[in-house]
Image 1 (spheres, helix red, strand yellow):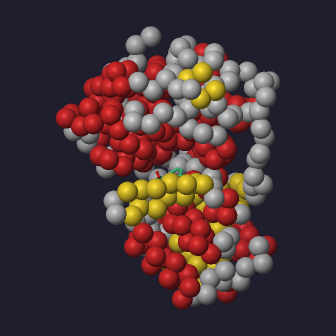
Image 2 (image 1 turned 30 degrees about the vertical axis):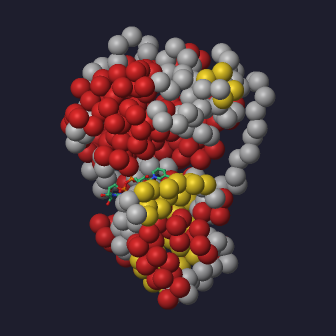
Image 3 (image 1 turned 90 degrees about the vertical axis):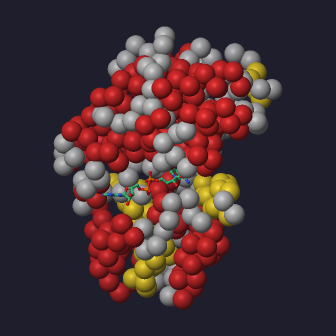
Length: 367
Ligand code: NAD
């Protein structure tokens, strides 16, 4: 394998040259680990925690506030998806008003991202308690939307200093949210397997993430209160978050960003629908990654294995189902192919347009 889009693309064999630059993470994992929240705050030397959530996650935020007792300084429970700048400003203002010296986020990716957006300004630590499988808590990536345009960037100061993964908090996540959220995590792993800036450790984590998610998600959606499956899925989501935070994502994440941003499609669902097709797109250009992914999925072909898993967990398989207009496909393909970026296979309008057509119709990827 040589070059794609004029960006050097190394083979998947990670024994070739690589850079290993893993941030220091602190993770507390396990059923009931939310009890450690006050200790995690004081361990950081903080004394005034602002608790952050969305309105729908209010009960989580109230519970966190009760547990924090004297170190709870106040709450901001108005987090909004995609972090409009007005909401970010009011969150930062609340943090100033209560003189917060750390931010405890408790909820999905929307909530975690709001804590990061506050920390970007102040540099104060974030303690994240994720309740979905999005993975934002493991990445230095933040996003803010201004004048309708969402900008994402990386800054290590927004990376949470401590993360509490308590599977008990995920028991209430309904099947129609759990399935797509788990496939969102799966997408981080799949793209990490062929990332040009991967390394042998990332490959191990990505393969293990795929394995954990593939074996747990059918049970998670079939028996939402199965704690063992919930723990396994959260374990996979943790690994997926690390992979996302330490490698560059390719065509799959690029397409999802375009479709989510320009057509307002739901985040986790668009990841779910696109993943088998993006995987098929790269099939011949990244054969080693495909073999690792297929093995971890217990399938003969990675793209088909992903599609079959999505069907099995009852998650959406077509863009049409999740609100994509048929007359938007040409524009989506144009937007997604405007810039070149690292991906095993060159990004070209014709094949990308075909990928979108297949995803729109919900076709099982052909071999
Ligand atoms: P979300 O945070 O909007 O949560 C999805 C839904 O689940 C919401 O309705 C929420 O109220 C509900 N919910 C959350 N936890 C629950 C629980 N335990 N029980 C019942 N309901 C629960 O969506 P998400 O998919 O978690 O995150 C998506 C957002 O995160 C997007 O904005 C995406 O861009 C961002 N994200 C960022 C990164 C990053 O690295 N910066 C990574 C992944 C996702």
